Length: 398
Image (cartoon, rainbow, N blue to C red; front, side, top):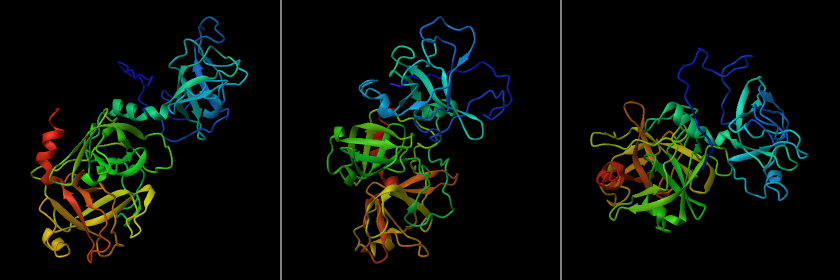
């Protein structure tokens, strides 16, 4: 449960809608970036509540307090391990200065090098006021930014990339720009990386049937959204338990329902699904992405990789697969001028830009290693051919 609320003002007298270094700026800044280091006294929480359990103040008061590491705050002489990753502490070991009763919801702000202030925490709770070893506890605003963005700006449209690629052409097998494929989902089996999936709305993920071959029990699976570097916690990842797993009995496709709705924002956005009128032209440029090296080694990587591919005809693809590729699949290969791509992760999305610039899920990786194929065609389940299965389950609750 997150102790945060957003209120809307009836009107604003300010024409300046940006946070800044102005002396009387009306707004505090928000950022995903880690802007502080533990135990560095650079923070300034404001409050007009009580200090040392005295009467409430008639004027706004301020106090500068140092941040405290999670290890110290969770020690057995402080809060004995009850703080999770969404909270942090600030204050003095000997007490004496702290936010207190009546300050709940107040800002804890950190000053940037440019002089602007960033809202880093929100006063949440503490044990008493300004007691030794009982630091003030603050909600980490970074973890609430998806909720804030979603509330302020509404749901993003499917297939929209708010953080586009750093270059116009993805180098085959190169690291993707963090969160530039915002529908990418990391699926974990018993808390270990297993495969990729694609977020198709706030509650459903699409992946390959091979991805869940190890177990169809939802309790063994979790989905991590907003992920890029699997070894680093960057603050906007969201891990959600899996509630239901539905696999097509005839085709290599699986729908996964997560336990609760994902918070959508610019780093977590569903991909569009094709409809009956969507066309995918042979030779058009599309993209695959996943946490697996696209080279022959095929090692799992820490960061998300991307590669540009071209759609190929089934007829041409079947010359390399002795006619085994069915009408329910589509093929793609590396453009001839690019480095070879012959490995993708199970469940990896194949997405193509639509006429309006938004990306459409054209396929899901079913054949993940085609390094031995002379022309190196990748085989993907054709999502357009899966519409009846998707609509039966995905739309049944709407």
